[in-house]
Image (tube, rainbow, N blue to C red; front, top):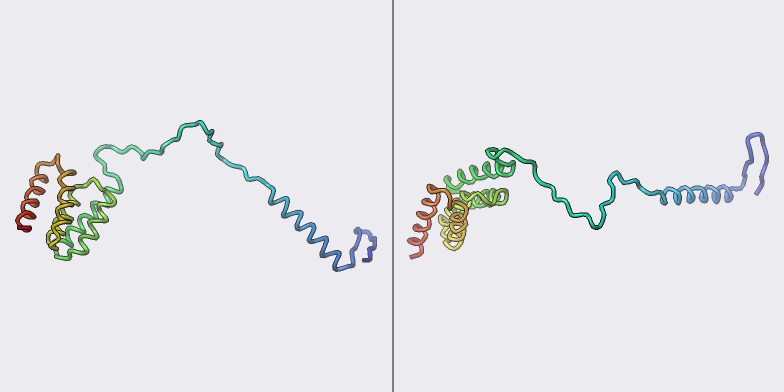
Length: 157
């Protein structure tokens, strides 16, 4: 290795020494960067703090949720498929509607109707039972549910 002093500083002429020096400096830089800690913008939660539940924003009582609106759209599509005799697609569409809004009893009623038309009374009875639970407060719809139940009884005889 040969060193020379110039007005600009020391010059290193050995490739091996240059490589070792650069490797050392690079490793030192990576070590320093790797040891840096990230700064959190949120304060840590104490272990004894109660968990906070995030609630949905409060909407006026007459305004349905976006999920309920999407479910209603799927219900309409399912009903159109049911009326056109496309039972498998109607069932699929109505099941998607139920997954978005499981408290809409009309979806269960229409699912029961589709299964009844397919000839599967076991499935039809289960969805009819769920429709009766969710529609029990609606006199008009509970009458439809009971009429559907009677048709199922006649079908199984």
